[in-house]
Image (tube, rainbow, N blue to C red):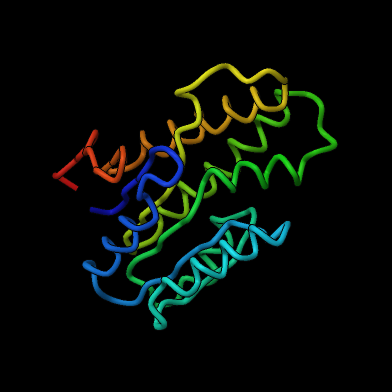
Length: 183
């Protein structure tokens, strides 16, 4: 498999599965972390994630422009884990917080995801991408939350269309929903 998208709810085991897959794939691994430590609780989460990764994995902490940063830093990595698209889209929102036009904000999210897809297609490495499904519940009450839900859903769809494999995690159980074995 060239690329796998792992989606599902919060705490469903997505990151754990991504790490297990990377360990099985062998070769050098680069872990692309999109989280920023905005508060003490998030700092603790990030540190816990760092401790759970193998010491020989390189970590690239990047909040936006993933495609460009991965291309510049991939080195000899054979596997790239991106954890996660959910925070990446949030970071794009933060970076473009002065934009009030939804169409322009959508354009920024699409550009970010298209840049990542181009990076994946140009690379020989295997990509394992983690994201959340946030559109399975109620409609958010405010505009920004609705836009975020919509744009993350769009980002997930674009990534899934270009992925060889898509796995949905539910209660720690992986359900394969797309598998292009001919790749």
